[in-house]
Image 1 (cartoon, rainbow, N blue to C red):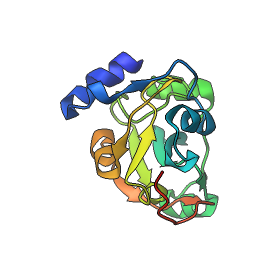
Image 2: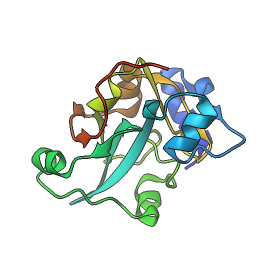
Image 3: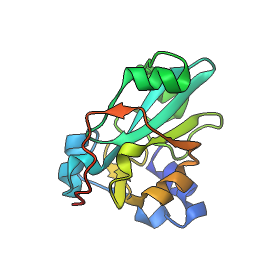
Image 4: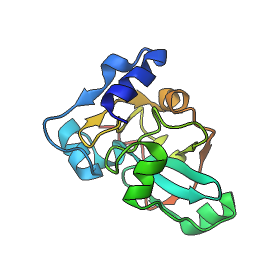
Length: 162
């Protein structure tokens, strides 16, 4: 997949022209925050996990980490991240650009509540130098997320919105 595929996917939401592309890498939370001039916490990172039949994506705030106990309570299994090769194979996006847009059918998408403290967040758009600014409601809709979940730790529940 590519930014072009994500733009095409986002047309159905009239968001295709809102995709941002950078001359420098935005493949990590820190690099994306620098490129966008925002707090790292506002970067919506997408982690891919193995499931019995394939994979699931969980989007979370840039300062959040998976809480293994919460994950196991929610999903009934241990959190096992995909390798970079598996992530590309399952999602069509390379690590650094993995996003919930323009992905194959059957991939489950969840959003962690760690992002809800911000009016907007910035997920990647299929490459290591792209992003889009979306409200949490827009992200829920555009990602076809199943639900908001609470499986993260190490984030502060404050409303600093920069």
